[in-house]
Length: 175
Image (cartoon, rainbow, N blue to C red; front, side, top):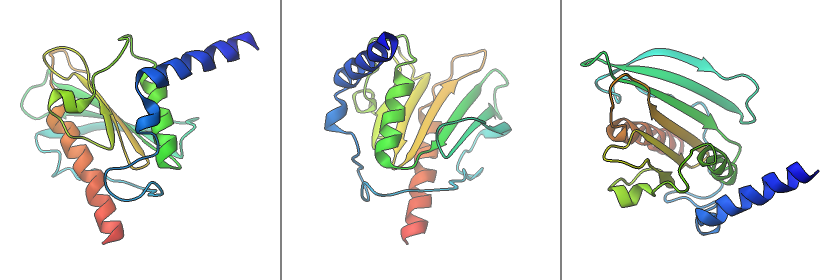
């Protein structure tokens, strides 16, 4: 019982650290009740990257969670891992975003806006000169993009393409 209380207390501290109450359940476009399903990434939108592998992750608490591995057409040392989760609601995506940031070793990840990126409804990037990882939620979709190659690769442009694909799926749905 103490472990559960300690875990919940830690989670609440992380939420406070990330000012969760100021953005939880809110979207920049559309309503908080938007629920997208079956979002597909158009290979044309991910110019310069080819899909090497994709796998639906079993046992996920989300409706559907998929991990993709992309390789650069130009540099064999550049690879990215994209994990997307279709959550049941915007708020659930935001709660799951907290779960993901809790796995990072940094005491606090910077908001993407402070790094010059407007991604998702809420987005956190990495420290350092390059964004080697980004986590964002757009509507009920949670996306985490990480550098996985043997050479450092910024994930910014790839993340923009993923976010644009989610927005395109939304606009076709509401069209």
